Image 1 (cartoon, rainbow, N blue to C red):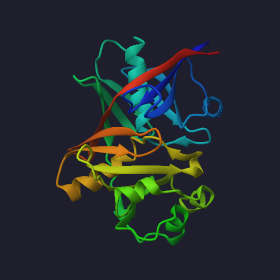
Image 2: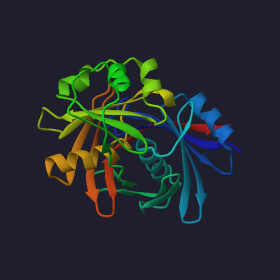
Image 3: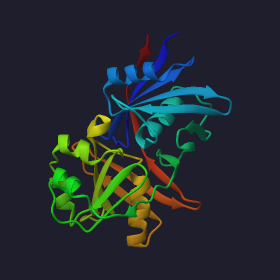
Image 4: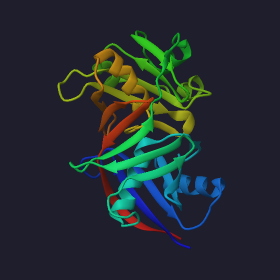
Length: 267
């Protein structure tokens, strides 16, 4: 059966910004090989696959090369697509069952969507020399990692924006994890911190806006800034803003907007 297919820009205020994701709504089960083939065909940083399952939706995420455990922007895109296309009733909160447990999405009064995700704080480690060399940096303030990614704090926002990694070397340096987040305190008053995210070993040299990276950035900057609510800016070429709110019980709320760019059917 044809499956509804959406191209959505997530964490975006307008089309052609933020992070693009494909969202495929399935009427029947499909195996991982098929989903991986579709994701490679879409050739976006993530393709989300949704299947209704009782009160919730089963949700899986694929890059063009691998299935991943957690993805914020494709979850935001999925909620936006379901509500906009009338595939989920009204504007009631949505529940998603994923490889990272149950997640949820709810609409906010200002048009943003809020996601309830697990916090993924990083623990401090010595910075691997191979990682810093691949990033092309020599001076850092802090390094750590969680179950998904390395996290590196550099000296300034200018250092974040100037990064030009060696992606071949970086792919090897981040194994067996997913990628690396590089961050610094923001230099303008409109954001609290900035970041960039690289995952060449997962088929994504640089991800435009990475919701799941903010599951680590939220606890990291919350501790340093003494705040529970913050705004992060991911300083990729497309760029995007992520609202962050620390919740009890090791949870985190991520918020942002989404824009549908195209709709169709996967035959």
